[in-house]
Length: 124
Image (cartoon, rainbow, N blue to C red; front, side):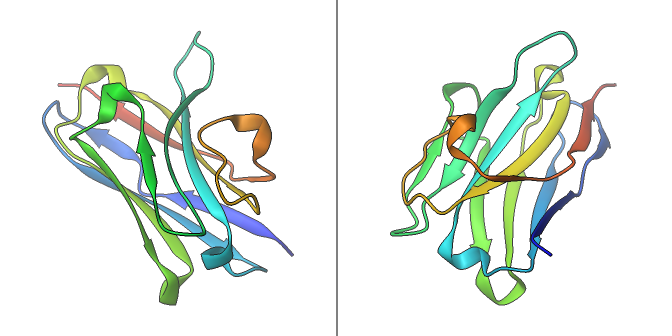
């Protein structure tokens, strides 16, 4: 069964860090591009970051550049999103998604498999 599962969310104070994980089962994540998306209450889904399956190139939305880092651990069939210096505006449900497309950017419609999401709350 093809599945992706996010984990690592939680409550953190402003300035803190979290590392989100996107673990795949039923397929080899190394051959897929992976995107991270988030949706805050009352807002549309936003693409946050992605990593290509071809050359490992990455993309970050401007609001997270310099704070978030996307990476792969192929041995664990997992992609991570390291989030540092978190701000209240980062509060959202974070989703990972995968696509066989080599360069999908953060256009949600290009992604095929989605996880159930993990809640990130940044608050003092």
